Length: 216
Image (cartoon, rainbow, N blue to C red; front, side, top):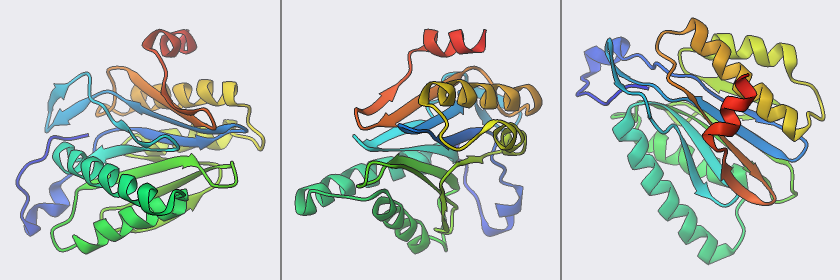
């Protein structure tokens, strides 16, 4: 993940995303995971970057790309989802994904330089994932997905290990192992792993000692 800098149209091709974020579906919900490194060019700007955010008790997302853009999106989405809850009292993950897609698409001439993985519990109780690109493209995933510069390595691990009916506890281990594998090969990813789970019980961030235990 990179700190935002001023970008003109001719510079867009030079803007690169450095991070690894993953999302996977389990028998109880969704697991989101990401590394903790924020980079600015060749400099590691932070070793404690937050790349997973709670949007709602049943919805969260990961961010890859510009820090400033992502933080603005978090503020907008939280306020919009809160208003939607007050008006309708029910919101699907697809509805939240469509809302974010529309926001991104409306700014495509001056885009937010981010990729997002949104996950949560649908109205029928099942876990689901969507990923979104800077232009507002919305893609549904019923198994797993990954974004960022370490995503190629992450996909290799997920393709090999994910299976139908994946137990939630095993999903935690797989998410940690996936990001760790990407960190070992992608120099832009590193400095620890953040893991969040979304189930019928709500949104929860795993304690650092739990993540470290799964790395042993």
